[in-house]
Image 1 (cartoon, rainbow, N blue to C red):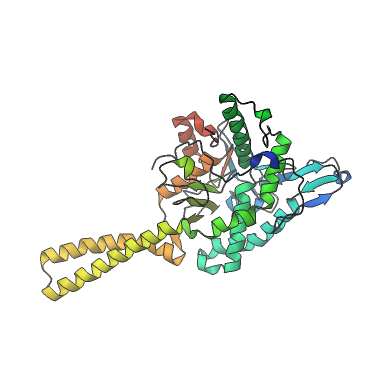
Image 2 (cartoon, rainbow, N blue to C red; image 1 turned 60 degrees about the vertical axis):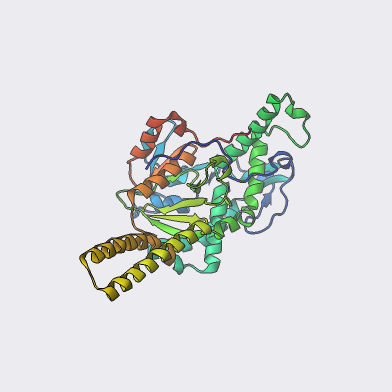
Length: 385
């Protein structure tokens, strides 16, 4: 299976990016609640805040028996090709990532993100243990969808896409002979304004984007300890094998789109367009119906050598299809397939801004991708035409 193509596309829905960054962050709805506290609360210490939470990092540690606070993962730096084994407390994180200063003090989303993580942690742990989607309730599935929506927005990669979009619009205007500063409702955003705008989107993510995750057909993908799923610094990744134009077919609601989130080295949560799955189910029903019809027909006429051979081939086709379709119906993991694991890991590499983590120190796939193209050292870039 080949690597994902590098595309310049807006894979996340960013609307009205310009003009919103100057609005104050006020009370927001749903689970992600803004906390205000006076500036004087800042005590000079640098607070490290994870954009990929430790609850996910902890599921990929290289020694599951390690004492809490000492857990380590293997990490690949795709900018330098360095492989090292850091403590999870200090990676895929940044200083005060969810805080912005305003006139009256500091606005932070950290506390509410922690509450959401506390709610989803036991659900994911049970899903990994039982490996059955049927074991989680409707309310719990809602919580997982909210968590995925938040994780989709909360990364450094998402902020870079806001910057790419803002700069792309400015460049497109200049190519047309228009001075961006003269355009109403548009301005070149500073780093602090990009951060502020991203936090506004993050605060509304469960409500705005959660339904797109919830409405997909969920399924599980099996990995192996020897061939584990990687986790990039933008772990909720999107793919669409059916879109002719990747730039227009990678939104969360795009027809044919699939979403992947590796939960642990041996299990990945997939979410795909229910229409695609319904077509697969329809094809499976036809194969099973045709087999039963042929079996009945041959049984009635007598089992000739030719008839037995034809029926045997059709049975092999039926069994092969059922092997792939039944897990989608039952909510159990699909059979391990190295090519599928490679595909998911390729997407983790593609979407990451810099860091890839794994249970194993083997990062041969990311290194091969870079050897194929230096462009893989960067995350996907937005293109404005």
